[in-house]
Length: 593
Ligand code: ARG
Image (tube, rainbow, N blue to C red):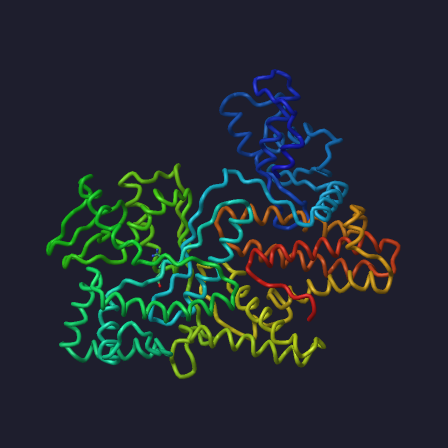
């Protein structure tokens, strides 16, 4: 839509120019700039609904153009003002109460796809706001606890959000706000002291930290004595006691190694900056709130901040003087705003933490660190992952599913199916199955609105049909294999055509034009994603694209046809765009399946 406006606006537009043509084209351009992709492209490629509000506004001002006395009339006037020889739009029609529907000219689409090919990648949409520093707080598991499916969701969504923001040019800080500073450390430290009495900075061989955590918790619940010392350990740890710090460090290191394994498998990049980092940044923040008179001290001495619309306050300091989740997040947001100089901060956690973050944002506004205009603050809250029985996702024996087991299972199933169906060499099977298995897990999560809960199903995510990564990866590989055959069997080498800058596509058949149109929708899907930061728009796009591509290869003969060169190039353009989408979703593509 933006490129429409650019091409239609007179180069030096003076809004006060009395010339009617200029005025109308200005009105038209601003109206059409709000055009959007049609839901159903049977009626048009793009739709613009601006005629109706425009009619009301001009009517109220008493400035309706001559002869216009209804929204439909307004829409017709807009259509009439568009020069026929414009390079982009074809067939403008007015529908219903004043919807303007338009088709994009095939010549424009051809040029667009040619550009994509010569460029080697689809055009990036222009940002409506300048690029800035964006902090994305994601993954963020808790030390000494197993990473669970919830953290998997945050990790998968977060990685994709980072890639999308980086793609359009933002400076993205990927932050792993690990839970490395809670009261649980008191009992963990105590348990380690008891289990490894001669511990002296050597890393004890704790292979199963979850088991370790369980045992410590059991001791904590059973023995009042143990509980008491544990609580003392927390105070000592926070005060910087050497032994406590050392043990804490060991526990963090063991956990970190486990987290790293998951990140490596899934191609995740994230920098750890956990809760402990903010420990010494909390007191000045509390002081700032105190100085501004924004703290209310509760009975018992807890220091709280109330924010509009919430009955419960944020607790900046507990009655025993300790700091909790709220304290850390207030110090973290201040740090990110003032030190990191973020203009946009995104938090990705399960939806139950929604209120917490809305309160953190409101408190940051209350104290004047941000305004609605100065910064963008987002919380993406996702739903729970359920088992096939609709209940919380558990193993058969009722334990929570370990993330590594889940990933192993996806890969193992993929290996079995590849062994049955494909003829790739045995030494490639594992790598291919891993890319596809992990891709399937990620895509199954990303393709839906994160607020919804979803039922975890290997069968559905590994399905070769329907909206799955497996289907898409096959579709992509098929397109590339057509390109390969073009060279091997017909001597048309797409790569050298591109190298010589000779790519020239003509979109004449209906399904060629349709595929070209879909390729061009790429920019729309990115624009949509930037609004709400939900990667499913890209999934919807790439799925629709691959359907358009499969229609094209069934309807149009590619290999050996007179249009072979153009059609092979169209296959390549589609494959390039699909790879771009996979990349933004954090999915590895495979060339041979
Ligand atoms: N560790 C938390 C959890 O497991 C998530 C932390 C999210 N980030 C934050 N700044 N609070 O739920």
